[in-house]
Image (cartoon, rainbow, N blue to C red):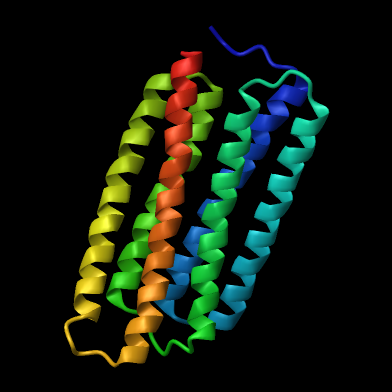
Length: 207
């Protein structure tokens, strides 16, 4: 059994996949910054443009929802997925901006670890949305399980990062700066899991 969608209904999936690919782009750029630590201001600005693109996609989805009488999924589910995807790129942009705002001199290994987990999680979200449109529900479920595992990995990475921050070796200002960056990265991973939760619910409705 396959979806029989009108071009307008197909557009919802196209836009959601665009949003998912956009968070992959943003996460990849942020990880590159933290690994290479070169041309940081220019790359942070590039992430800002990616975040702007995310806003545009979200607005397109809302506009299409308002213009469509019958949608391929529940309106609330579509809007929630779009909103959470937008939250992901917002958090990525916020983390990148703080590298400049806080005048970070060099990245930490914990930041690299969190950004790596974020990249992997975003990639799973993107794959899950492709599987969902093609009604590959077993693959969607597998991707959601992996997203949950990665979110747990992110939680543990954040715990280790904060544990080191508070071991007395760092000045108070550095602790404040890195705590905010670490938590912003972990929040982005959490928002990916929110998308996964919606996908799991929608899969049960449509399987």
